[in-house]
Image (cartoon, rainbow, N blue to C red; front, side):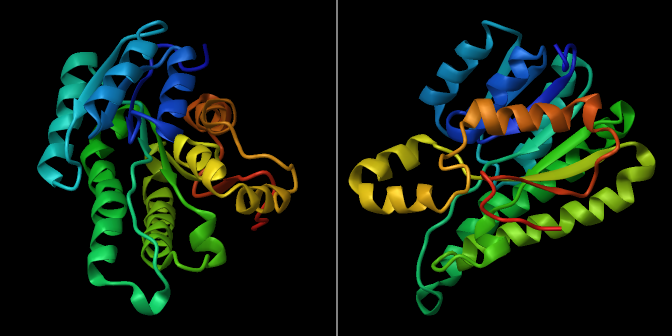
Length: 249
């Protein structure tokens, strides 16, 4: 129960990696606020969390800053504090570089980068009180420059940049700010593996550990570590939870 009594917000947590993180943290005793736009899946995740701890569900459009501030305020009103912020939500569309449009950039930045920025600003006063933890999400697509991922990679690298800035500025406040760059077997990847088995097998064979990460067991457990006191002397870092696909320093 490494997170017993802690309070966290996890965006994009109705399914996939976000759900895995929410469940992993709930099993360690944290109260979790689920933030998503999918009410049916969000409700299901809330019911799963309820087996271990108390949670909240917010079906909100986080591309609107006013919704973000309201979420933080409601969480603090219910639980009295905020210890953990996980900015996982992100939507994007792939296209070759010369076919990438401003609409694609707007989608990626409005669902990923700007919500991360606004959640960090809104949560800062409470995180300072709690000497809390921020976990943002990077991607190998940005670090390695994955083809067809211009808008997504740009937003993810922008998130990495503000994470490092916040780590430097907020370190004296006792706030740790880190990133996870994952590869995970989400529902979307599972569907793709069935429609394109040869491409899926090629991808897996390019991972040194020869498998994709489990959203809860691998990505979620890493998030638990970064949210716990075990990571108190780590900040501003990109943690590659990708089976050894990318090595950075």
